[in-house]
Image 1 (cartoon, rainbow, N blue to C red):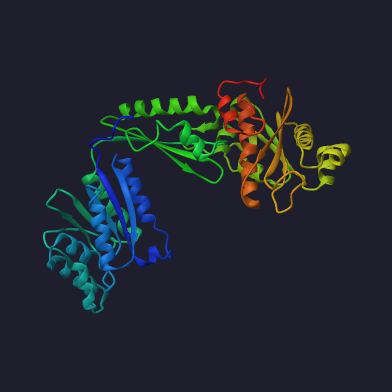
Image 2: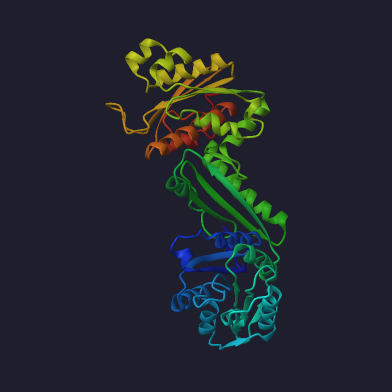
Length: 436
């Protein structure tokens, strides 16, 4: 991969004991990172520190050691613990001075309110010598910009998001390079993060294009970013990496623009004029509910049967008495009969079932997390097994995700890996098994 030479390096610092204690969610860092990344800047790090002078100063020094631009949110208010400006003055070796225009503006605001102004409010008019005031039309605390002798720039922004965001937009416009950045989220189901990292090792990293894995509970996201002088060039760079990822991961890569699995499944069914019905035991309707969230699902989702008990499996889905007596409810044969029953009774193109051990109970030879799936279609029925890790609700979420993935695979004619082992997921790239 090409080196990302020349890209602007940005470090983000969040100040506030309410952030480090977990009392509030730090959305400022997320929004700042997104804004700079969309303008082709490279975010080198994010730190959160309490309202402590030495801690803020240390974090500023660390950020300046790795970045061209440091953006700080929080700690610009009027109280004694609002000391971000003091920390910047300490790091820069500058005295704090009062901006008289800001001080006059603060006094005028209180005159309009008909209230006396507490003297501590004048802290908001203090800034390191040589710094620039950034106007704040939505609050009393202005932002501060300071250029350092080495060419680095520090921007102090207020903490409240309604004040910070408009100011941040102006800062991004001011400092971000005039480059095009293309960002894509590639979504993968059926492979773990470590396996993906091994197979894509030469593509991973922070170069240009950059590719980074992020493990979610039931899937893995690959964040792909390409930067170039023109958008067309960036798109071409991203296309090349995306195509190579697809070649290596096969149908385990199910989306390249951040679409959810249920959105992909509904689209695939809709484009082919096909439909699906679910038979759910341990998931109790979770897979059906996820498909129903997608606009247009009514055209492809015939319905679902929640068959938790053995009696429900017999009466609602036609599972045989011998199957339950000889094989048990958690078995490939039961899953296959459940899928056929859902397909027949709801007149769907495909019937998909899931039955398993979500815990804490489990079978004599089957551990918690064992789930059998049935996929019935015009050309027959296939049963597969997966072994999911986690607590009860995690197993159920994995099961719903896998059932939807099996809908997608069957509809698109992809191979259904019998056990879900990694080598099967990649072999699915080229193999077809009669539409199964």
